[in-house]
Length: 312
Ligand code: MN
Ligand code: MN
Image (cartoon, rainbow, N blue to C red; front, top):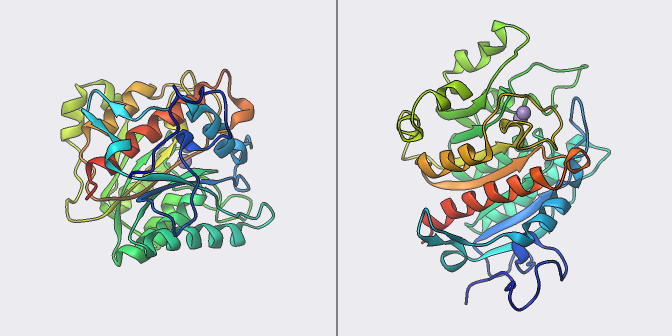
């Protein structure tokens, strides 16, 4: 018997204790294949805070979540056992202890040969997730990175580990294979042309919103090169979306992807061997009418479909 969400017909969607997609909560050693967990940490943001509240708000908004995709003709609920593993025990006073706790949480998942999806949290937390993924994979992994920003920035105010630097660290620590790393949603303005130096130096495939809009999505997706032999990780910064679709975020940038385009990219691009994923930078205090939280739920849903399609 698969772990299944509470039925909306048996228990109204506005009732009950909130978990991701109304799924059962389980411990690490429970009977699940893909674990959803919260990472309520926003100690490394450079502008607006609030992402620490995202796991709670996304659980609430995911009450409307459903499992069948007519586009994929697939139900993730039927194909994989998904559970809510609760929140990672971060330390709001310590980056170091927080990243160690995140890595340990993933170690528990990968140690059981299972897969996970972290609901952040600010984007600095992805570095800890990638460290765990690299360790479990035994080789640098591929990365699919949605973002308005390059996230290869230098230290800020003397601090190396802020939310705009995770990708630079992941490249420098050789956690990821740049040849199988792609960025979606990147756009300006940048501070200068040299902002692109790091992705150019490593040979990351950086795509802009123009690249998505200037051709059909199928043609765009076909141009993405990912190594079929490597495990991959998806990191989805909600600010890849236009602020019209995701106002509740720390550093919004106009001119972004629509929620629909991001969902279509996740359907159209063949992402091999997905071992883990995260969604970050949702800041509920800046959200309106749950627009951003609901977008996050739709993106998580697409990711669960990728896990489901690759199950067994
Ligand atoms: Mn960003
Ligand atoms: Mn980011």
